[in-house]
Image 1 (spheres, helix red, strand yellow):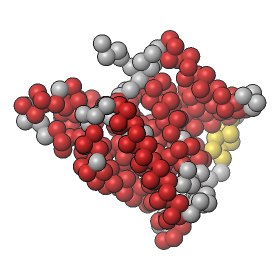
Image 2 (image 1 turned 180 degrees about the vertical axis):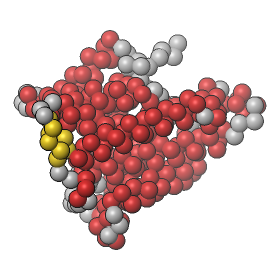
Image 3 (image 1 turned 60 degrees about the vertical axis):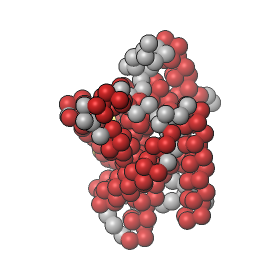
Length: 284
């Protein structure tokens, strides 16, 4: 039971970091491999405020959301917008270039060392229940992941902004003809994806660590979650992240010799039987 709980917590962390990519890749049809750079930016915003200015951990989270969101808006309006109609290869090459630029910038400003993170006392320790030891911070991650998933699903499906976004993605010309400001919708959507990445990056510092190589080390994990869950499906990304988190933790515990391979095996097996992901739809 402890392994299952830890796996669910790891899955929730994967979801929190990767769900922003599900927004930009799945809903905007933009291959943004620089997603991890926004997560890293949120992580650094958190640790700088915490370690250098003594801001309480929970109080750093709004900054970890706002700073990547602002960076996302600036980059979307100056760079990303020019490539919406470009080929997938152009988008991949451009975003990979941003990844290496962000790695170099992080090296320059923060050095190559891991950044320390000291959680407040009320988020540390364990709760001992019959058959399972529940880590307080892992429980906090699970709760945060569920809240983000429900709010994001509601905003995409039930709100007028979600309707405008779906219309803009399906047919920009018709959306503009109906009076929808497509450029504004895309800017806000990209800011949302970047903000979610920053939140996940800040919450993930304690478990994943934070150094300038963060966007490169975890890029594949973000892509796996989105591809297994189904591009653009929020709840699909949640279920996929939990499945992959449990498989990863259980694999590393029971078969440590090949534990790191398990998550890739789950991805391959899923995509063989469900090429569009667990909840993805064919685009024919």
